[in-house]
Length: 503
Image 1 (cartoon, rainbow, N blue to C red):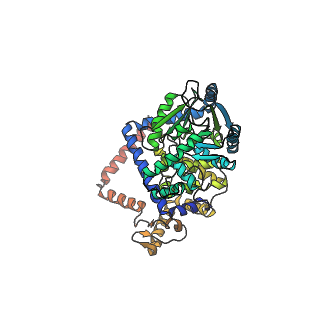
Image 2 (image 1 turned 180 degrees about the horizontal axis):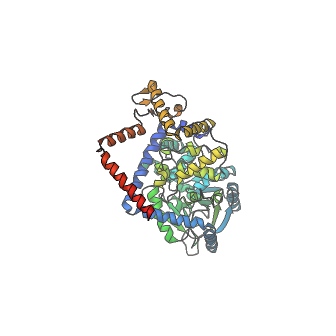
Image 3 (image 1 turned 45 degrees about the vertical axis):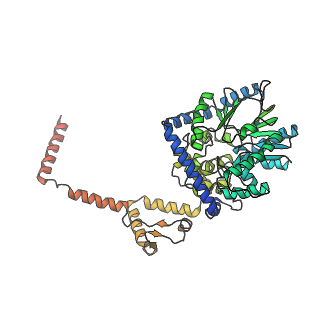
């Protein structure tokens, strides 16, 4: 499956492609602003949002710190409920287990609800290679499946496409021209997918949260497709990241408050399904056979790491993407992996062992901290991005020119006289290049920056220069001390000092 920028070798090239795509930039900006404003309104309406953020953080910190206990409890209870539990150490293991279940059930078709883990595993391609028809039933996922692309957003997979582009894709599938009207397009997809639901041999879901105390798994959605996937087919496979545990249903209440508000600005998603095992004799629907594949794929490597363990706290709401000024300009495909935005810039290297291939994406950030402010469980992603950059340099993969430049800056900045002289030299040297308060030339380190914006010129008066002038003004306005009074005070202090020594 194409990522949309697969020919670009690094994040800068992929970002450059994205910045030249006017449709993508407008579509991403429009949707992220809507989601960001929705979150802001929903959190303000909640009243004590910061208290709930802290509560959510503490639940996640506690759970991950005791992940072995809660995973074992979940597995024990799920098996008691009749669920087949499988553990997958790697992506290859998860794919093999999924294919084995399909082969055992002689499956010809699979319908899927939204699952970022399945995208992480590239499971659709594996099923298709095995001759098994695989259909995404989430509207956004269905659109990008038709386009042959990966998701561009954790929550809104087709965020980078506008309705005219979507109408073009669906018209090809329909064999007729469909109006670029959301009602018409959704109606076509609904009719098309209903046939697939009824014919599917296997339903595959992700897992928003797994409840340790009862062995249940919980799905959040807005379209109702996950309920169809988890009730109509005879066999259900759930892909679950090993960190998706919460201890109890009471803890889920906190997550059910934080997740929808952070993701889409809703108080609650339209559907929240709790599934505790396969169909029982008294049940009207549900799968006869249920499998949960618990996926590691690099997650356990973060356990015990003081800098990255909190990464496992993520509840996949996508709020950090909507807040990130970099993501809002370049979209998700520029990050090159399954996960995009600030969480992707940290999670992708973490899951892939911090290999050289992913060294560059930690630099796709302004380090403004907007991701931390948006995160409902307070993951310090901006700090993690700095840690990743440090590891890159320490491993010898840094940019040599950048390293030389930083050493030079350190020498200059370590001495106030050198720093002041450098600022004054810069103020003089920039004069031939400044136009209307900005530098537009595309030369050296300014080439990348000035390709899309103008570099502001150094101020005519630096902060230090302004501070020195202000200090002189204040001092000159103060009343001058009386020399005679000063002399008398010094004499008194000297006498007191002698008296203390005498005692």
